[in-house]
Length: 350
Image (cartoon, rainbow, N blue to C red; front, side, top):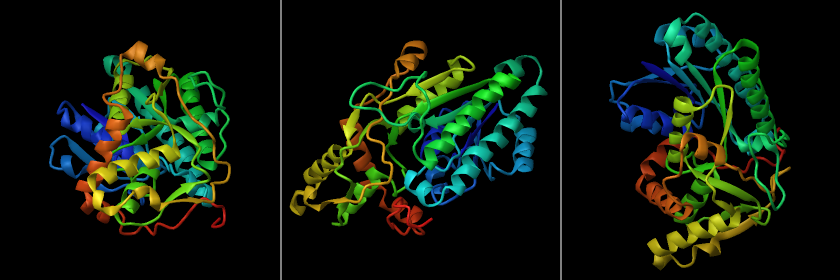
């Protein structure tokens, strides 16, 4: 049997693909356009597996996607392909609308045509998992958590495009009967995250003695989820989740951005005590327009219904993440060769 992982050369997608392939139970077709944040280096550890397949394909290419369904006949689709960086969506929203909305439509449409032609047990067993974000719900005040029934209130071009794709996924289930599930996750962190995101920026800048940029006053709160725990959760949703349902996946680990940065600095202080306090490198910079103050999710449903739970705490996960980047600087160099590290998201580049 085969499963599709769209966006499987990206951060979360590659964590899922590696885990699926290492289980050595079924073939995995990674579908990825290989934009700046997708890299075959993320799949190098499983590239020799006979279970691994790769298609360099744009999910907006309807003919190519339809051909992949016909050829590989998947039993499930993990749909993670998306433009995902809020700052980039502020400066260039068109790519987010194209990939996240049009691309999701193409995937749903092709999956529906394929599924309707299946027979018996294969049709009954097929699943389409649409992977999304907690940012579609807007921002929280000081209290409360997002749940599966929270109203949508997106505040950035990125989150609006993901909200739209969530609605498409649910509509294809309600209108056509396609066996769709939806997940909304909190902030992921861990190995193989592209160096434009907060944790790798801080880790790599600190290693090189560069300033550590923190938006605004660093008071924005996020719930942090280790990427490999997320990959496990996605598989449990496909295996045991109820068709048509939404599942929140979170880390139960809320932390202010500035506290995350200081935590990384303390880890690096222990590892490199001769370099002086890394916190001295922190610099507060102009905030992102419309920066949501707080996100946090209630993951009781997936814990109670599917038995999923995290494998590690945030403090342990941060240490593991720092250690991974320290041990994989060649990977950083390879994936960053065309990354300019310029500040994005101020709205000045549109």
